[in-house]
Amino acid sequence: MNLPPAGAEPVIEGLSAITLSTRDMRSAVLFYQALGFPLLHGGENEPFTSFAAGTSFLNLTVETHGPANWWGRVIIYVSDVDAMYHKALAAGFPPEFTPRDAPWNERYFHVKDPDGHELSFARPLS
Image (cartoon, rainbow, N blue to C red; front, side, top):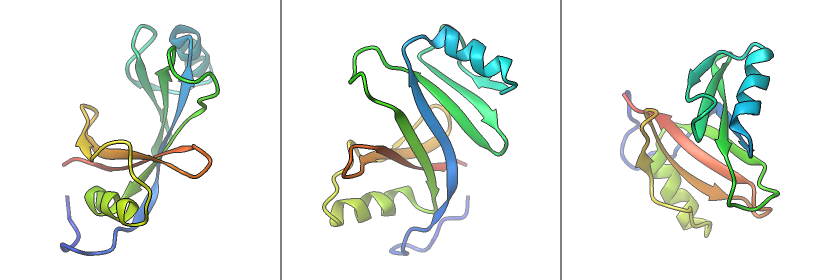
């Protein structure tokens, strides 16, 4: 992975995925498979499932204990996750956690916009 020079301004590179919440993973998986979305990770009995959506992803996550109106998450690829994290902090928007490496091979963190929409800034790990 080509990393930008230290201190470089992070660049928004593209939309990686949209993650939608579901209370019934089995029904949701069957729905998206019936529409032709190829299953990449997870499945009917998993808390997190990912489908291919062209060069992006459509993810599902089970939400049984959070707010009933939680809609999902937008995942945005950036050139430098840690620099974007520090940019959000400096702007007065504290992320929910520090950047971390995920088992699905991305480095990421989440921050909410002023309306409570969750944004995840991420970059694939090499």
